[in-house]
Image 1 (cartoon, rainbow, N blue to C red):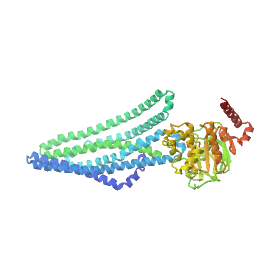
Image 2 (image 1 turned 30 degrees about the vertical axis):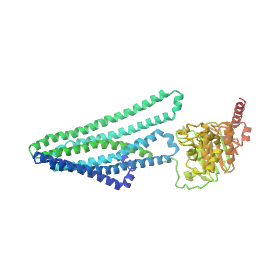
Image 3 (image 1 turned 135 degrees about the horizontal axis):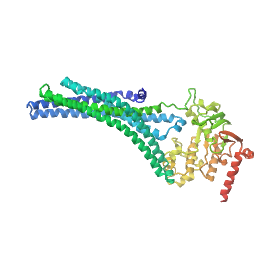
Amino acid sequence: MKNMRSIHLIKPYFVQRRRLIATGILCLMAVDVLQLFIPRVVKWAVDDLAALDLDFSRLAVYAGYIIAIAAVMAVLRFFWRRLLIGTSRVVEEGLRNRLFSHIQTLSAPYFDRKKTGDLMAHATNDINNIRMAVGMGVVALTDAIFLGSAAIGFMLYIDPTLTAYAMIPMPVIILFTRIFGKKMHRMYTRVQATFSEMTEMARESFAGIRIIRAFNREEDEQRKLRDISQKYIGENMKLVNITGLFFPLMVFFTNISLAIVIVVGGRQAITARITPGDFVAFISYLNMIMWPMMAIGWVTNLIQRGMASLDRINAIMETEPEIRDLPEAHALDRANGHIRFENVSFAFTGDTGENSIESLSIDIPAGRAVGIAGPPGSGKTTLMELLTRRYEATSGTITMDGMDIKNIKIADLHCQMALVPQEPYLFSGTIRDNILFGASPDESRLQDVVQKAALDETLRMLPRGIDTPVGERGVVLSGGQKQRIVLARALLRDCPVMLFDDPIGQVDTETAAVIIRTIRQMAGEKTVLIASHRVAATAFADWIIVMENGRVVEEGTHDQLVAQNGYYARAEALQRLESTGGAAS
């Protein structure tokens, strides 16, 4: 039943291409029919030879028949491969696109639990297995049913008794196929799971290769990969033990059929119950049956592997986003930017009952700049993630312009906010590609955000300027350069709410001053939230809240907080001392 539930994933493609598939199957069946006539031609030639009633011209005619049949079969084979194998490629493409599209709808908690390597294995190896099952699996299954049945019909026409003897091993083959098929399905599932682990291990090692080499941990990583590879080999060898026994058994029982035909059919040919031509043709038909009988094993192999992969894909496709649009959610064109947190609490899944945010209440009028200060782990980033609905508040309400953000369509909510994350992420491509990120502004607008992000001097130093490739995850750039590119990307969006998560954490003091000046210019026009443990980043804000352990412990303007002599005042004094010491040195 589980497998049948998974079939719905590929059913639409069969429905859409049903005419092409039907045409492909008809071409395949036509090839099978033409194959059945070749033994008849051979029978005529052998009988004429046995009767010594054959000349060269008639042999040429028989040869011409075979060549003509082979030519038609070649043309039909092209069409069935084009149609049936082509369908498997369409299924592969469509299923991969659907999987990728669905994964993008899933919420952040899902990716906290799921490994990237596992998702990569789904998108590559699993879908490839499904393609093989849909393509060659359908072909082999059609051959097994149609060609096998038709060949048996021709065998019955020659001699029913000999056909009955030849079919003696068939029930045993069906029994073994049923038994081994279930075992292969379980083993393929385990093999695929281990492949996912190995893919994730390799991906993580390649992504962290610089750290691995810097700490001389190459041998440790090699050992880890060797261990997971050995596990993968072990699971595959268990599978090989099953398939290695299954396929030889299929061949063994088909050869038993051939041995029976040699003994029984040979005697009938000697006693003239059948002609020598019938005997030769019968063996040819039996050989045709041998392929479907062996194809049963191959089909079972392909289908079980494909179904195991389809079940894994289906498990993802059936995963519902934990955070999604509610039925009553409505569109929002452009917000004013009035944000309010009302008694909001939040705990990450798996936490031991302790909230990351505890009873948080903040009122941020539109156009105000609010600083969020506090030590690492105090909940600054989590607060922004709740506002963007990357995570859902456990309790309490977050509103924008008086509307609960849960009642705003997620896509529209995201259109109201531009985020500069704490950890800048760049995609492979050029600096221009990463700033634009799909947008298409005029060149003057692009140059404006580059300047505001203090990126213009950096671009002048690069050989290709803004069209410089950044490499994988921006590997050719410094942390500060990456952070400024991400800042330019956010500024380009021109959203009413701007979220800055430690925007100066990786830049020098002079560049930090330029970035802060740019952010200050937005105050009054946009609602600005800036989170940082550096006092210089939040000092200009209209209002500052100080968080510790998910709670607001202080709030006020910069001068008020310095006067309170709490965490903020101590941090300001320490950072001012560090800055003075750095200048003196």
